[in-house]
Amino acid sequence: MSKSLLLISKLSEDQIFAAEAAKVAGLTLITVGTAQEGASVIVREEPTVIFVDTSSEAQYRELEKEVQDSVGLFSDKISANAIHFLAAEQLENVQYLIQSPLFGHFIHRTYQEDPVSVGQHYGRIVRATQADRAFGLANLMKENAKIQVVKIPLSSQKQSSVEAVRNYLIAAKFQTRMATLIANAVDELLMNAMFDAPVDELGKQMYKSTSRSTQLKLEGKSAVEMHLGFDGSYVAITAVDLYGSLDKNKLLAHISKIYTDEEYKVKTSVAGAGIGLATVFHSGGSFFFVSESSSRTEVTVFFKRYDSFRMFKDQFRFISTQFYF
Image 1 (spheres, one colour):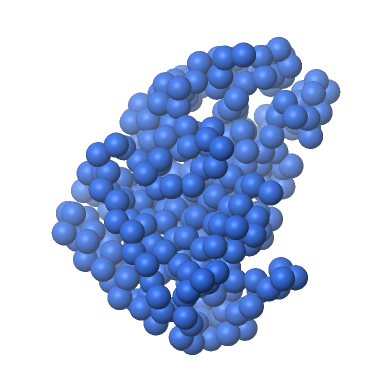
Image 2: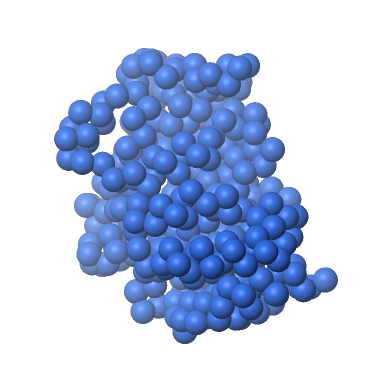
């Protein structure tokens, strides 16, 4: 059976976007306009990947019903790792997607009148998800991307690594304001890898109440790496840990929550507050989370370089997850 990407959407911009993504991912594109038609294709073709317009809760509920009636929500013909929800709303405004048993990927429809190039960018994400394991920054970027690997032996060296990223971005012609914002995102990813990822044999966080200023040796199971890539357009930074303890439900709850100004003031200094990821996403960053239970987690953040800070903050973004057990 040929590998295919099923798009369920009547929007022309989605069709252009999906066509480019399918091309890069090496998939044949099938396009239908309704959830009912999509369910028929799922039964008949068993598509490898599914893009679906879920801009309203009614659209999502129709999809859920059609899938339930045709193959079942937990059928081996459909999985969260293969379904990509498209919506024009911010993630916190589509809680019906966050709560869905089918949630695997969220695409915020911010194509900025360029669905072709962002379709190519996202196509590399889709292509990576088709591999046995979606690990490796090189698989997520253009072939000409320059990638550096930085091993961080002590948690106290985090700040110097973050500052090195900031300086690198400024040299790569990112505006200082953009470079600082991205550096803050990297700080959050490394902090999570160092202090939130480590768990004991029972799965309990080892440093949940530990001050983030504590110096930890990052060796053996606790080793942490930072991978930095830039292809002339997109910068991507990956934080790597060897615990594979990422919890999907907690992750989505953190990244989709609306925080008040008071909560930012009170909680940003609290260990494990989880505020940073939501801030990064709202600031224009995209995420690719890949985690194999008890083995490895890679969290990658992407930003595209723009001359305008407004376009930078409003750029195309997504949250993509791959969990292996």
